Each structure stands twice: as C-alpha cells, then as structure tokens.
Length: 196
Image (cartoon, rainbow, N blue to C red; front, side):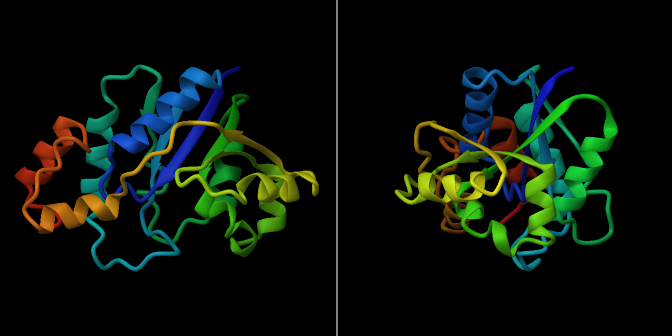
C-alpha cells in the first residue's frame, strides 16, 4: 500500500510553487507518490481567462515528467461537468488499497465548510494543509476541524510568493516568466500563445 498525496488545481498555468509544494510533501512528509489532478471545469471559477483544459493538462504533464514520484490524473479533465471534491475523493478511495490524502491551501481551508457536502467530505477525506501566505489563523482553523473528527495535518513548508494570476499578468505585460515556471511549460505557453 502506498501513501499518495493528491494535488488538485486549475494549474492555469502550473508553476514552480506547485512543484515545490509537491516536492516538500513527498520529501518531508514521507509520501510515496504525488498525484497532480488538473480541474476540468472548476465549480468556483468562471471560464474567463482559463486556458483550455487540455492545454492545462499538457502543461502539468510537462512540469512533472522529470520526477518519478509525480504522476498526473486526467479524471476531472475528462468529466463533462463540474467536479466536486467529495465526488473526487470517493473516486480515488474506490480505486485501490492505497491511502489517499488531499492537499489544499489555507485559502481553501477557510472555505471548506461551504464546499459541497462538506460534512460528508470531512469524514471521508484526509487533508494536508499548505499555508502559502503565512496566515496566523490557520492553526486555529485546523484545530477547529480536527475537533469534529476531520483528519488534517499542516505542511510546515516555506512560503511561496508566486501565483498563477501573477504569471498570467506577467505574460500579458510581456515580462519573462522563466524564473517561475518549468522551462518546458514556458516553451509551451509561447508555442501556443497562451494568456496573451
């Protein structure tokens, strides 16, 4: 049985912050594999400004190809409707005997009670919380959820000061993104003229 951490996201585009987060969870928290899970149609975001899902899937594959602990799932990409975390967790839990944990950011942690079927989700899912912004209230919020029986652990990783929004804005402004995304991803964005 393997311990697998699932990192879902729009990945619009994937950047070195995502990779650093996955490497930290694999290296410092003892996970065997990290599964990158690009969203097809994120229920909390409008389609405006989001690259085609197959472009985003391809960029995730390019960004993760050199690490043998990383793999990519196209489960949500291939669904024709909004994917909710509770349904995705059920899908992964039904796959095999591996132990799946889901990585979410602190921003998502504070919204967790608003997610679809959140009470059921908190019973069936084990969460890894990555605090990218150094939010002082994260520990208290984790403690609140754990008090109700939710399985949750915080990844004490270095703060990451880059977002996909920053990168898209840099592209629009004609600035170089080479320091913030893996080289194959930068090349792909240029080739297909994404985010202009």
